[in-house]
Image 1 (cartoon, helix red, strand yellow):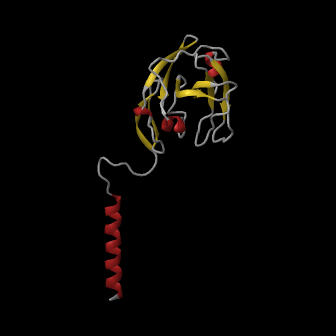
Image 2 (cartoon, rainbow, N blue to C red; image 1 turned 30 degrees about the vertical axis):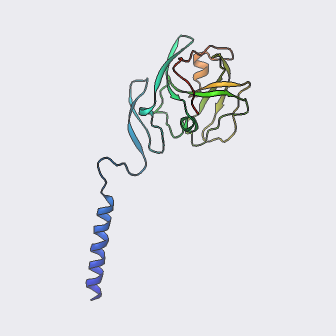
Image 3 (spheres, helix red, strand yellow; image 1 turned 90 degrees about the vertical axis):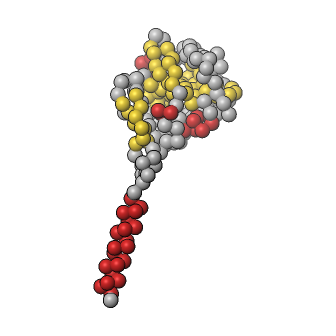
Length: 185
């Protein structure tokens, strides 16, 4: 009797395991990567399922800084601004890709940025209401230090570390943000 009970128990356990492993075609399971994204470097890239706002779903706009054209994902509401570049890897973000954070109101310098869950080292450029660079902070991966602006700001541009220097961004550099990019609560 024990042998039959054990065989029945194992059969039921195996059936439950198989049933639990089946997913509907429209469901995602586990962690890893989501749908494809095209970076400005031309490759098909993917981003982490840890993200709430996947790159493929975000609005992108072109910005030209000192003659260099870049593509930026628009982070225009509280949820998008909070997530920022969290979980993105070097293969998700090209050298001419970035994120523009648009706030509905002027932000005090003390409202800085941090690098929680951020894998990439970043240049974080604070931009005034009149679209001039205020200062650039360098964010280190996973660092929780508050990186602040040196004056009130309305926008922030995040790009891979080294981009600000490569693009010639320094205090006073004009960063023309399209009028369609507006911050929302």
